[in-house]
Length: 565
Image (cartoon, rainbow, N blue to C red; front, side, top):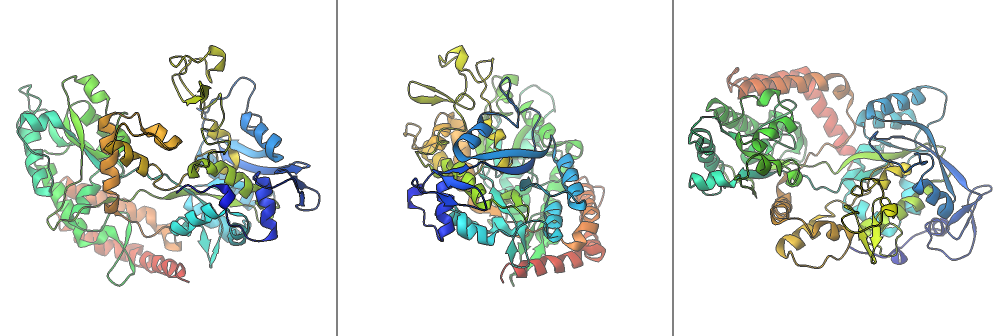
C-alpha cells in the first residue's frame, strides 16, 4: 500500500535526526555523535561506514568506475555525507563466509554493516557477542511503513533472534516463486485429453504421454514428467512437491505443525510415504524421466524443452527462459501453464518459497546505525511507490534506465532511439544493474513480499490496463501465456505449505543434519526407483529418530517456544 514518507509516524528526538539524514527534515542541524552534524540530510563532516560483501564477477562498471568509486558511492557521499569503505570484497559466498569467520576468530573488528546468508554463520555471529541487537534501533529509526512491513511479516526475523533479542534486519524476497504446471497443450489436443485436475487425471495423462506417441513420430521416445532428483525431489523446478502436497500438508525437508501446535518433521509423516508410493508407481511405468536421479533442475527441464517430456512443474517465470526454447526446437509445439492438481481427499500443496534467505548484521560498536536506517529508507522507498524518491524509476539514470521523451527506457536502448553516448553499455541493449553498487545493503534488491502480485493479477485480467507504478510497468508488456502463468501462481499462493522452522541450525543439526539428509535422499531415491520396497520408509523413520532426529525435534520445539515469549 502506498504511503508517502511525509506521513511516517516516528518516535523520539533522535528520530528527527534520521529523517534529516533521509532528506525529510528542514534546514535545522542536529548533532550525531561527537563531531558529525546532519545538515539538510547530509553528514558534515562526512562519516565512514565499513562493509564487506560478495560482488558477482559479472557486475558491470563504466570505464574508470569500481566498487569503491562509482555513481552510487558518489551519490552517497554527495547527498548523504556517507563514505563507504570495503573491508574485503570476494566473488562467492564460500570465500565471504571464510573471511568473516577469520575476523570473528581474530582480533580485527568486524565491518560495521554486512549481509549474511549462511544460517550457521548468523548463529555464530550472534553467539559471539560481536554483533548488535537491533530492537531499539528499529524502534527509533525505522520509518512507519517499514515497521508496518515488519509487523505484517514477523517470521522474517526468526533466523536473527536469540534470547528474546533481534540481531539482524531481514532481506525479504519478493516471493515470485511457487510451483505451477507447464504442459504440452498440443499433446493434450492430439490425444483428446482434458486438462488434468486431480492425481487420478495425472495417471491418464502420463500414460498417454508415455505410450500413445504424442509427438507423432512413430517412436516410443516420450514420457510424462520431467523430474530432478539430484538434490531433492521437491525442489523449485522439475519438482514433485505437488505430489506430496496432494497427499497431505507435509513436505520433505520442512517442518510443520501437529494438531497440538508443536513442530514435526515433514519427511517422516505417513502422507509422505503415500506420495513416494505414487511417484514410485509412475517411475515403474516409465512415466518419469529415467535419468531423474542424475539430473539437476536445469538439466531435467531440458527434457521438456527438447520435446521428451510432456509436463514440467516449476516457477511461473520459467517463461520466457528456458521454456521459449521449446518452440524454437519445434515450431509446432504448444505449451501452457496449468493449476496444480488435487489429491484423493482434495488436498493441494506446494513447497513454500522462503520469505527471507539473508539479512543485514551490524558490528556491536557501530556508531551510525541512524545513518544506515536513513540510507535504508531511501533505498526502500521505490518499493512503497514514493513518487518523489530518487530511486522511483530505477537505481541510476544512464545505468539501469535511460530517459527518453520524459519516460524511462530499461533495455534495448538503440532500438528505442537513445543516442549512443547515453547507452549504459556499448551493445546498446543491456542495462547496468547499479543496484549491485549498494554495498550497505549487500548489493541486492530490497523487496516487499508479494509486491508483484497485484500487478500480475491486474494485467492478467486486463492486458490494456494502465500501469500505476514502476513494478506494474515492468509487468504490463508480458505476453498472454506469461500473464496467465503469473495469475495461476498468485491464485495458488494459498496452497504454499509453510516451513515453520526458520531459525538457525540447532546444536544437533550442526553435527547430524548432513548425515540425516543424506539418509533421507538416498532412501527416497531408492524407493522411487524400486530398489527398496515402499515399506523401507518405515525403517527410515525409525532410523531418523534414533540417529539424532528425536533430539533435533526437541531442539526445534524449544526454539519455537522462544518465539512466543
